[in-house]
Image (cartoon, rainbow, N blue to C red; front, side, top):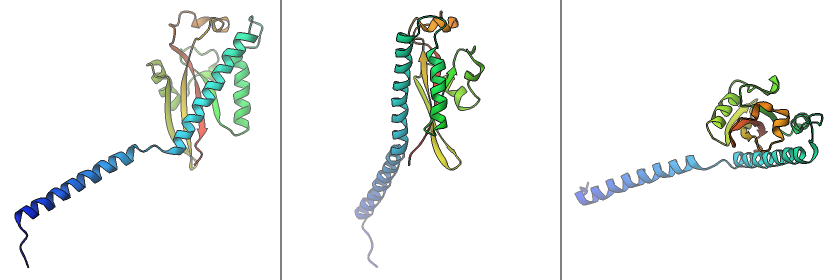
Length: 178
């Protein structure tokens, strides 16, 4: 058997190390590849959030004039219930003040309490992917700050909240379409 020269052995070792390093680097990059189904679900949440929040502001601006008018929040809770019944997604109002307007708005243990903490710490959105019954869902919560003076009509307790601080959130549960 012919002996392998030292320079050839060094080149082979360097190639092996470089290849190993390259494969390790490639594996790290592969971990960072985003799941297209999750990205679609995140986009859906952004779209829904824009639609819901814009609509609440428009309804409050144009149709809420005094304490006897139907608050936009109450109207949207009915809408959220109808959307859930039809199987599209789930969304609910979550309190972030610790003094919920309605007990039903109190964050539930787990995702919702973690999300409210993150939103109060300044994040605008908090997300998690969960699997239930073999199906994946995107859980997301988006901050709701007081954006207009009319909010105080129904929510006097928001009067002294600093501008931009979250007083609540919309909590979403969106099916991830594979």
